[in-house]
Length: 372
Image (cartoon, rainbow, N blue to C red):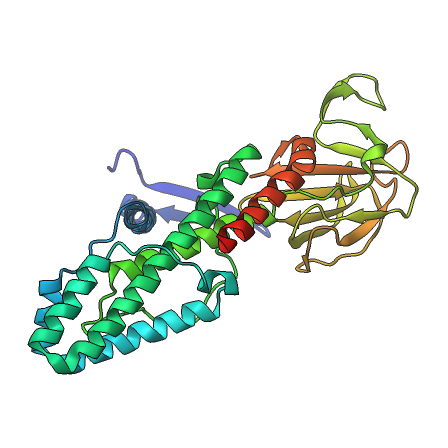
């Protein structure tokens, strides 16, 4: 080690005076060891955090993709027999959970009806509890109704998720990538762990419901963020996506968006719901507004003459966010519109042309399903 870190001397001259500073081999070794130790500790902490997040996601995905393991009638009878007060608390917690979930869902979810997979087990539980512990028969019936409701709601959420995923694939996007990139920013609050049982554990059917609802919400939010409204008149598209002759120097160049020709001051509309993430100037683009739609999807509106949006503002599809101009590298008044996925520019035209019909079909499917 000493051959790597020999004693070193530094000469410093200041105002006519020369000073000598000597750094010993031992001091250099200690400093290097501390630096390596800090880097190693940082690397280990990052690896542990990454592994923990991976395992948590893997466990939740595994539960989502498999059938929840249900308690047998014999297990429930044993619990009723050992502590009826504990079972009562268990059911109260479940009922609170169900009521909280229903209050946050649209009315069409409440009316959904399907066959419960746990019907046989809950029927057996009611029969055995009624025979062995007559005073607990009412509790057993409440539990059966709760489980039936949870399983119906889970199936409804899964059907809506599948419909949303199919629509996303039709638009050339990956629903699984959309789920992995679901926006978790601006979240927080005190930790309140969920338990449906007196022992602090959660029934897997209830956890499965929570995962299904979260997946449904993420995919449907993803659909809302897909560009679906023309930011300007489609009749005035002056330049498409792809290689073209540059209007300034005449050489071949990649054009990463659509150009909409129009008069200065004509309104520019948000192509989808999202949040304004940038308002200002960018080299070549002039005055720019960017809208983040979540899941790594962003739309950019350039060459504006004026802004009608502010950073952090939430917009819906069709909202006016600015006006057409000719700022930046522009030969005349027009809107340059881009769609970016994880900061990679993609052709906006398929989204704008296909998305309205795909989204209409997906949303009308939800209405038809509710009416069946």
